Image 1 (cartoon, rainbow, N blue to C red):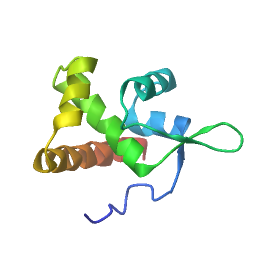
Image 2 (image 1 turned 45 degrees about the horizontal axis):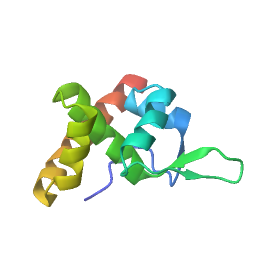
Image 3 (image 1 turned 90 degrees about the horizontal axis):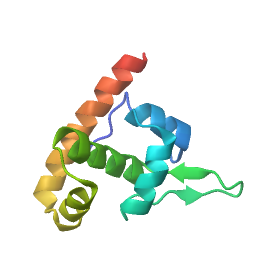
Image 4 (image 1 turned 90 degrees about the vertical axis):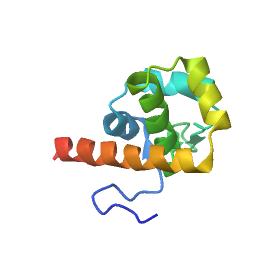
Length: 107
């Protein structure tokens, strides 16, 4: 996978940045941390959540499953834990497209 030149290339994102990129409120992100094992931000020395790119991708996948495909949280959790590699690649590609659209809106 090649990285998108428009996408921010940072190692860590704070919750406000992830909120802006994903279009979700910070309280939703904090709640999803408790519901989905794939979302595990580190906490820095100051106690702030530091999300990595894998966390951002997982958040966008969960958002798609819940909001576009109509899954419940339990259903999305089950789908994520049992998904195949090919299905995951398709969702990642779709997520990249959504991120590009978000970045265009932010410009």
